[in-house]
Image 1 (cartoon, helix red, strand yellow):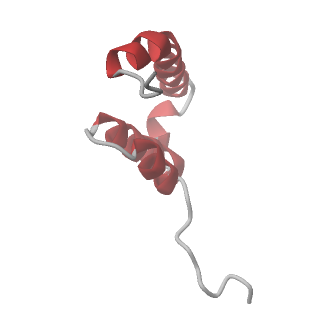
Image 2 (cartoon, helix red, strand yellow):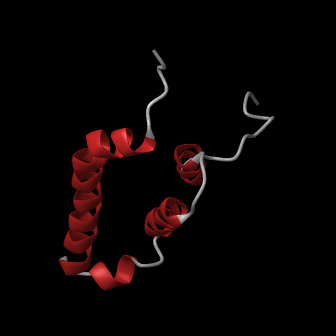
Image 3 (cartoon, one colour):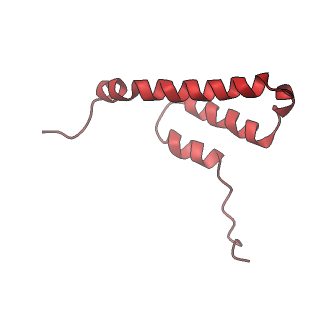
Length: 82
């Protein structure tokens, strides 16, 4: 018996959780937008990273999780111990 899952099976199983997580992100962004000063945080570095991560989600292919993680990660500094 093959342990490989079919894409349709994975989608069937994961769709409710994916939908929930996307709605959570949308609701958080709505709360920021509605809050006092919400329009002023558009260029905040964290908001920029959130928008970059959302762009990655819209791309096709694999490794989206890795690419999103890299958006939120610092670049490696070989001098970090100093």
